[in-house]
Every structure is written in structure tokens, then in C-alpha cells.
Amino acid sequence: MAGIPLNPQYRSIAVLAKHSFYLTDIENEVKDLNINVVFADTLAEVEELSQKGLDIDLVFFPHFSKKIPSEFLEKYTCVGFHTGDLPSDRGGSPIQNKILRGEYQTVVSAIKLVDDIDAGAVICSNPVNLEYGSIEDILKDVSKIISKLVRWILTNKIEPIKQVGIHGFSPRLGKSHSEFQIETLEIREIYDRIRMLDGLDYPPAYFTIG
Image 1: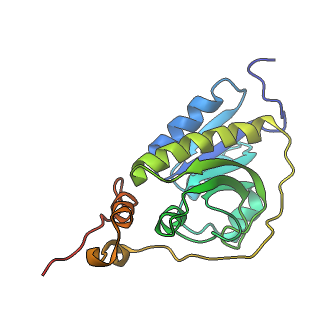
Image 2: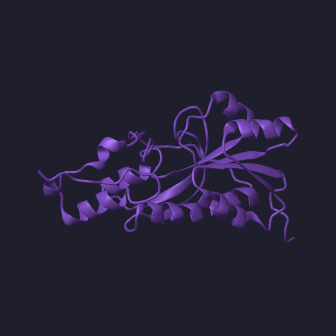
Image 3: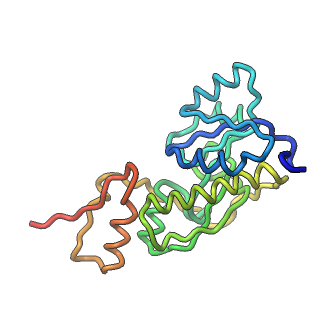
């Protein structure tokens, strides 16, 4: 029946995201479902809504770089999203690290958030191509995928799958990683180094002459 999700156990969800386009895409994707969607900037806002009587079934984190306390994870069912192959691509800056290795074909996965970073069971996933476009272009494409994964979770009964394989962990890139040595790179590598930091609040790539 139109307007009613196939999985009736979900009635209210909260969404926390770093950039507004994630919120817009999710809102547009689930607007025909009988779901109460609330948007929050902080974990404290979710707690406040809960204390006021809102029964939050799921908390989605499309792009949230802060560590979530274990107490919050125990109280709410939290779903995060990771771009990269799991478990080998766990860790920070997964898109940039994939691009640096020239690994352009990967997936965006919805995972149950647990205390260990990116270690939760995989709920569902969808392929994504990182071969072209600025980081802003890529993240906006990823946002569209995430919104569809959110809808899929809300409208289907899914059994999460435990991650299997060799665990990897990549460090989050900092400002010091924005500089590159132009004389040591091929044209494609220079292109990748520039575009993977081109947009939003990322520190732009640069090289020094003299």
C-alpha cells in the first residue's frame, strides 16, 4: 500500500550528517513513506528528542567523523555508511585512500555501528565509481546512494552480514597530506591528488616550487 513502509517496525528515525545534501537526499527518498524523520546536528539533540518522548527506532550517520560514545550505541540502533571494501578498507579518509591506490571501483555500505571503527555487520551495499570528479562530486553521488540504502533498510527485513576477510586500517589524512611532489607523479596521479581534495571543507592539494 502506497505511503506505508514494507517493514512496519520503523516509525521514527534520526539523521546526523556533516553536509546538508545528505539530509535533502534522504528526505526526498523517504518522503512517500510513513516515517517520521528528524534531523539533528549533535548526539545531544537526539537524546533531547528521546527524553521528550520521541521513540527513535534508528539513527543514521551518513557522514559523521566524531567518535560515538558506547553508551549512545547501546541505547540506539545506529547505522553508519562507509565507502570502501570492508573489512580491508576500514579507517579514515576511505575515498581518498582508494583514489591514491588507483582503486576506483568500490562500494558504499550501510553498517551497524559498534565500538570498533568500521567493524559492524554490513546491512546492505551499492557499487560506486571513484574514477572521475572532485571530492564534492563524489560525495554527492555517494549521498544519492546512501539515501537509497536508507530506503532499502526502512522497507525491507534485512539480516546484517558479519564482515569476513583480512582486516585493514587506513589513517585519516590530514593537512600535511595535501602537499605532493609533482616531479614524482604521473599526470593521472596529479589529477587524482588534486580532485580528491577539491571541494567542501577539505584542505586543497598543492605543491611547492623553489
